[in-house]
Amino acid sequence: MMATLSDLKISEVKLSGKEAGKWGMVIDQDICTGCQACVAACAMENNISFVGEEDAGYGRSMHWIRIERFWEGEYPEVKMTPNQPMMCQQCGQAPCEPVCPAFATVHSMAEELNLQVYNRCVGTRYCANNCPYQVRSFNWRDYERPEPLPNQLNPDVTVRRRGIMEKCTFCIQRIHRAQDQAKAEGREVVDGEFTTACAQACPASAITFGRTDDPASLVSQLMKRRSHGVKHLEELGTLPNVTYFKGG
Amino acid sequence: MIKTFFDWLKQPMGMIAVGIAFLVLFSVAAFGLYQTQQAPEQPIQFPHKTHVAFGIQCLYCHPGASKGPSAGIPTQEKCWACHNQIQKTQTSALLAPLKDAVIGNTPIQWVPVAIVPDFVQFNHRAHIAAGRNCEECHGDLTQMTIYENPQVMNMGWCLNCHVEAAGEDQEKLIKLSDCGTCHY
Image (cartoon, rainbow over all chains, first blue to last red; front, side):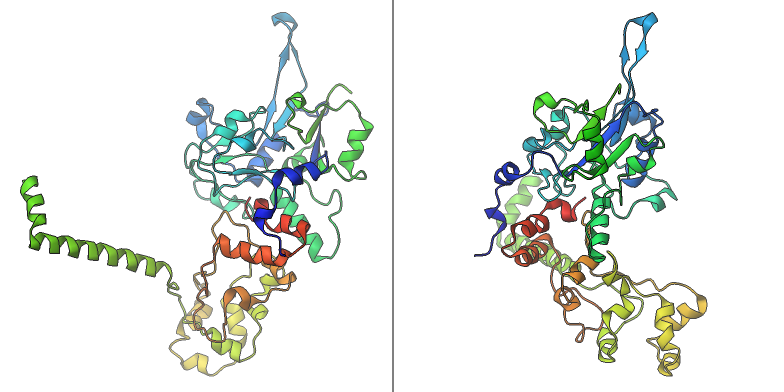
C-alpha cells in the first residue's frame, strides 16, 4: 500500500526524531561587538521591509534578527552586559506552532525548522504573542520600495505583503540551494559549505551555523569545547536550537 | 419609489428583467473565468510544433531547466543563430518582429505562461534530475503553437505527483510533502 499524507502523524515523527535538531547555531556573545552587520545582512538576504520612522515609533520595526542590550546595576555603577543577537530559536517544541488557527506556522519534519508558510497566514498574530523570544514581526502595511530598490530583492525568498507574519528561517533558501548543488554534484552537503546571511556577514565570526546532529561539524565542536553554553528560556521546554556563550 | 420598484419586480416583466440581469452576471463571470484560462498574447506567434518537428531539443532553447530553478526563455540572439541562415526569415511577416528585435537590439517581450506564484519556490533542476520529462508537466509540444498549460498548475497537482514519487519511502515522503520544500 502506498503511504499517503494522512498516514503521517506529526507527534510520532517528533518522538522518533533525535533530541537535538538538525540545524543549529552557536553565538559567542564575548566576540559580538553589536555592529549590526548581521541585522543589515539579514534584511538584504530575506527581503525584509523597511518600515520607516513612523511605524518604527509604533514598535512595528521588522527585523528577523536584533541585537539586544541589557544593563546591570544602579545609575552610577551601570554595567552593560554583552550584546545578545536574538533571532528565531527554531524551537523543537515551538510555542508558536500549536496556536496558529491556519496552520501557517508548522514544523518542518524534513529540515526540523519552524516554517512560516506565507500563503497560509491570515495574520491573526497569535504566534507572535505566544513567542517567548519575541522574534516574529508582522507586516502592518505594504511597505513601498522606491526604485531602484526592488532590484536588490532576493529572488529565492518570497516578498511578503500586508497582513503576513514572518520570522527568521535559518536562511532555508540557502539550505535548499546548498542541498540542490550538492545533489547535482552527487555528494553530501559539506559542513561550512554555506552559512546563513548573519553568520556570513559577522566580521567577528561570533555566529556559527551548521548541523548539530553531525558531531564533526564546527557547531557541534564548539558546543562540545565550551560546555557552558546557554539556551535561552530552555526551562519552558521549547528545545531551542541556538546556543549562546558568554563570559568564557 | 423603492416600494413600487420591488412591486414591479414581482410582475411578469420585472421577473424577466431579474432573469436577464442574472444571466448577464453569470455570463460575465463565466467569461472572466474563461479569460483566466487563456494563453496570453505573445509578441511572436511562436510555433513550438514546427521547432520540435525539426528535432530541436527543449534544452537547446531552455537550457536553464537542467541547471537551475528557471528554465529560461531564449533571447533573440539565440533565435537568430538559426534564423539568419533561413531564407524565410527575410520574407515572412510572422517573423518580422524577430528581425526588428535583432536589428534594433531590443529584447522580445515574451509573456511567461507556466508560472507559479511568488510564494512558491520551484526548481526545474531537481525535477529533471528526478527523471521527469518536460512533457509530463508542459504537455505535448509537438501539437502546440503558442505554449498553453495543459492543466491547472496548483498545489494539489504538485502534491499528487510528489506523494506518488515518494511511494513507500517514508523519508522521501517527509521531504517531498514538507511545506518548507517549496514555500519559504
